[in-house]
Length: 279
Image 1 (cartoon, rainbow, N blue to C red):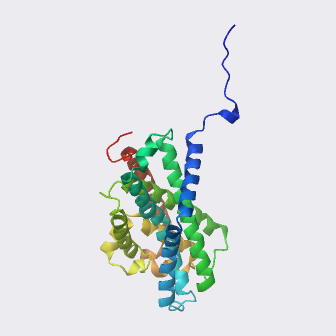
Image 2 (image 1 turned 60 degrees about the horizontal axis):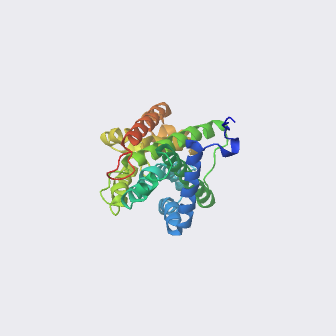
Image 3 (image 1 turned 30 degrees about the vertical axis):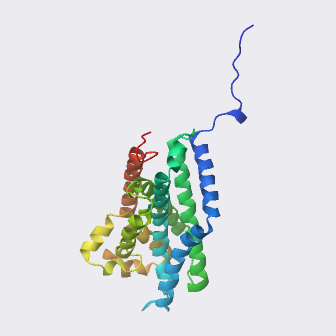
């Protein structure tokens, strides 16, 4: 009698890293949706910014028929996309690292790549949800107009996609910075708020001092905001509000891509399941 070895059928095939990542993302979504206060805060904070600035500066911008709400909406969408990673994701991973969740995950068969894929997908869904909510509020309260041509939606697609990837890998990379779980929120929120004010989210970028524009230009939020404004604002705003009269989307593409690549390398090379454990 000879022994035979059966090939695993498609139904019994071991899951690959991406399928495990999808499963991890589904677990993240369920955990997030059950924390009602976290859902309300995550989705409500950018809406609060839009309501405050849109109502305080009610009316149309001088010399245009564009409402203040339409002016602020693209920048706040850009900030929301980046905060989904460098604030929300980074904070949650810092907490998981310090409360032992990552150590427990290290004892399971899930590979690091699957865990990171799950986190990136969760970041993308969070950013998409915040974008949809902001657009709904903007359209309902501030007469925000959606783009009507395909080119603008194509621009939105690559700006949003690169923004999500940059946000996610940066969130993973910086999640090791807080020394305690309690300090995580402060560590990430304080510098991010400062970045919002120098990147053209609330203040016209061209009105900032040149040295501040130079600093902001090194970070992804400035280019995310410019990209979103190119999608949702009329063409004449490019000449009115941008230094040099151009959004310079080609430079934005390079900067965002560089942040994705560098952030990915740092995230992969520095990731650890715990504060001491390596692997």
